[in-house]
Image (cartoon, rainbow, N blue to C red; front, side, top):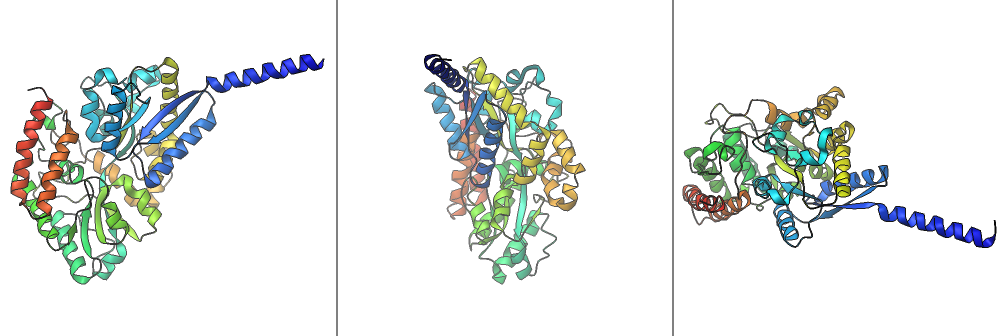
Length: 432
């Protein structure tokens, strides 16, 4: 071979290599995972990218759940939307209403998709009334109780038997504060999702009319019922001397628990990664219920988020998204995600594999969120909440809860305003 021929061959090889590199399709995945859960996202993308060379998943952190939703809406309007976006449970109704903006996951996955492989309660939450699954259930969670065992011991409480009802929680919080075991007895993330939406489902009382919005968009809120008023007034009373401390509208209160400031926390099961990472001597228990509930405890409703696919992408991008979702559905991946993050395994195979491995025998508390969601057949009160503007309604609730917690109004007034303002906002969003 002459030097000229060799040089030409080298050039051709370089061009082919360059073309192969350029052929790789990049798929942006916008998400809201921070802390230990962000590490999981980065690891998943890395593993998928290393397993094949046709597609590259690029995770992009976009802030909190509401911030990520807003970023996605703005990007779509600017025609710069990513292929995949993680949207929290409250944004499900918003995304369902934007039919032209999204491509149903059932269409993306095509014939390879079998929704019977996924946990039924999760599938139904992210599906249309006709059963078409719209988004991929990436990180579904259930709210549970976390408690600081060292603080419990100092306060003379049973470290192996956390409170099971809300009156027991409130009594324990007072003992913790009075004993000096911790400056604060109890805190909670997500007063909307945990203390309102799941409080309704877990206690089998209505959050709103028309099956909380699943039967029709014409919803009237019912969160001013006596059971809600009594619950929130108890929290407001504890807030007066700091026995209860408010951390923020989403997951900020978790830091009050991790720092040792508050001894009990109701938070997503998906918060487990950060609790484990903290090295705290902690315990977990089921979400407390109200003894006045209708046969409580009933079942919790999914939190966390799912992955939505924007419309208007190329066939190659959709092939890449499908390949990534199939990767995420693998039993070993789902089992690992569940075991390290605290989120629910979204496939039945992953749940069964985890159970067969003896994981729950060694970690019995880790099955709590699954048992809470699957323990009973959902009722009209406990299938979930589906509003066309749930994020907006949550903002209204948070404004009134904050005024209640700073002593500006009592719980009855706060919940009355929530119903009045919330119903007006829902009617406007539903075009009534």
